[in-house]
Length: 182
Image (cartoon, rainbow, N blue to C red; front, side, top):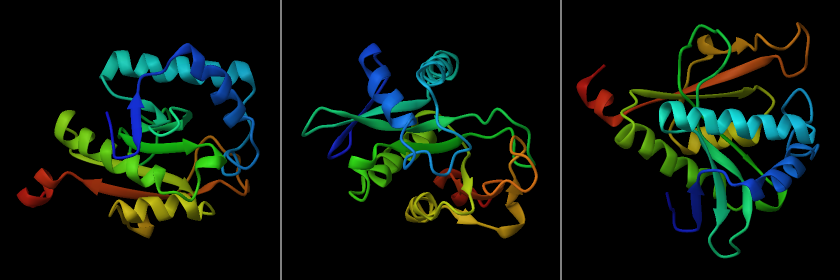
């Protein structure tokens, strides 16, 4: 898939080293419980690719068109925990700090939302993050996702009292669903 400035694609072996570097960056992983070492980062790519094989969609690797460099991922995934809103399909993103503040996450996310609804027939896409993660919340709002505070939740994989435990949930319904009034 393409946007004006980006290519979203399946993962390649040469993505593993820069992805591991991204996952070891404390700034990138600020709103996650821990950094990922190389083995955990590689295992994440393996899970992402298995998701593509199973569902046809996933967290696409993202390259800048101008530099042809890997900058992270944007895509769709299925949360692996139980919550009041699961099962669900989530849109998520993780980009290298050198790509922050340039609109890449939003640009790619708009393309992913369109694919989710128009190519993969999803009725709804959710996104969630730690309540403290205002940059990601800003992207959710730019996507016109809606937030109802009653949907906020404590992430079940984080211990009580963890600073990232409280999460916000945003939702976006397909335009087909919205027109049908459902």
